[in-house]
Length: 269
Length: 331
Image 1: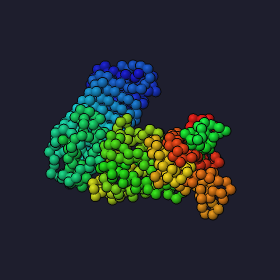
Image 2: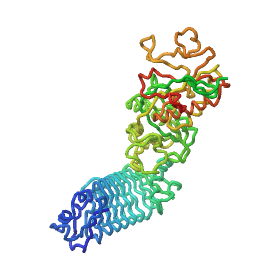
Image 3: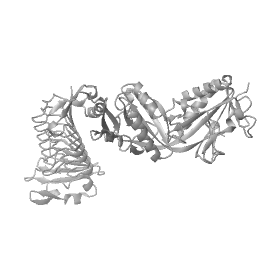
Image 4: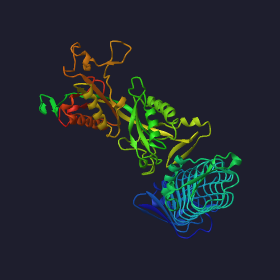
């Protein structure tokens, strides 16, 4: 019950798939889909140049198959529907999406979930740098929705993130959650240098190894058990390292004091 | 001894006469709020306070009561809690009452938190937070719960969006007060009632207490009067133009023999009324049936003589609860 686009061979240049969206393709027949223009380097090519198109039943789901690591902007500004990618993708996966479900079964390169404002983005592999962050020149990063990374994330993850919920099952690079404005980020693995650098508000939840706390954080003298229970009961549905979170003790630290110190670090032991 | 049965529209059960009449009820707006606290004692303090002075919309603004206690497994934050129901004649008035009562009685009460007890859209995922939304009412229109109370935080408040629902965190002297941003109001039914006519005060009170106890086991209803019982049953209007309700002299035993249309007999010395507000017509019916069964179970030997109901001729309220139909007998 889907539209399936199978990539025959990886393109020689970066291929822009911003127009390949489930809501856009659902109203088109196979011939019209094959004629869709795709950005290739500085020019455009019809979709059929690289993809085999097949339709089965209704158009509830769009499936992309093949090695899509040179394909960028998959799910760009996606506003609904289900998009499944059976492979690895390039840059900007799920960037600026507002609704719908995007599931990448492989890895994603840089800027995945960048400025996403709604919907659900799930990446089963690793993601590159600046994921869930802001586009160059923009003030705010991720603004809503749920972003789940089953692997590890690169540097500057969630830079300037303002709203939404993020799960990272693996490790994170340097400057994790830098300049965080608000939102919730839960991570199971280790983190690199300078985590929470310049974070103003928001919640960082560490369910794995306790991070080295920056000097610009202070321990909270009392806990916040009620909101922790609400949050932990939601987070633990992720399973894996997040399981049983509501039963764990939690330490709370506040920071970054350099910018007001109203963010919180929740260390679940 | 009167034999049980139906003779010329007279229904008799266990020696008690069930009048061939009906209770007349009205559409209302309602919400359920879950109050949790560090322990049940403080949850109860908050719930009792928040539902105080809420017996009748005539002068209280709303009618409210405690629906039931909640175990830690039934609440969103895993603490003991209490579900309260609030009813008003309009959504606007109910929203006003929610803000006042929650602000003055729950925010102020040590260790409490509060949540919507009727789902607001978007509904949380199945099983996301226990207790949010219970059977008996569908999703309703959202009104402020903690949305405006958050400003008590004077800028130090912040919020968490969890499973699509926003929860406000207001710093207070015992930690932080957590309140869901909105609750939902839904259509409801107010004014179901039973009149218990007894031989004396002791037997009337005993029957009323037994009936209220049985009704409290029915979900989605509250009996808003003190102890669930009202002794000042009223009729619409008064000889004094300023009053919209006044004593129902037809059921006043002190006026037996001098009022032209008494509803009492010479052996009826005391009458108690139980008023029921519920989320649906079926809920009110179930509560009334539970009350009827409890009264009947006492038997005529208890001093309970008759069970009746109050109405206004059927012209004011669209919901009519016929006692004989509730007992399973077609009128």
